[in-house]
Amino acid sequence: MIVGEKSKGRLDMLEYKSMIHLSDKKCVACEGGVPPLTEAEIKTYLSHVKEGWNVAGNKKIEKEFKFGDFKQAMEFVNKVAAIAEEEGHHPDIHIFYNMVKIELWTHAIGGLSENDFILAAKVDTFDGFDPFD
Image (cartoon, rainbow, N blue to C red; front, side):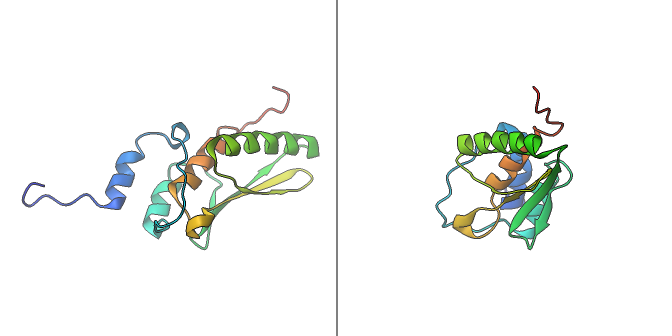
């Protein structure tokens, strides 16, 4: 480190790593032992996913998706399930007739990790989802 240079903290590294779009990243297995994201880190990550994701108690992020009917909602759920399985990071999914609510949090640390925002960004790629594709 150069004398007088500010040390790179976790948030600085987050801003650097965020230059790579979250949807292009892969989830990394989390067995605990790391702290959940701080409020400032959550705010930074939230700025890198599409609108509509809400933070619940600094422990979860959630978003509701609306559909024309139950069949469309279930086709969306199946797409989310496939990407979640591929990433090894599984959301809580609440299914209603024409609405799906996705909740993301990292159970092993009792809060949010980068994995939650990676999966959120990947789910957001289904925005404008056409069930007849």
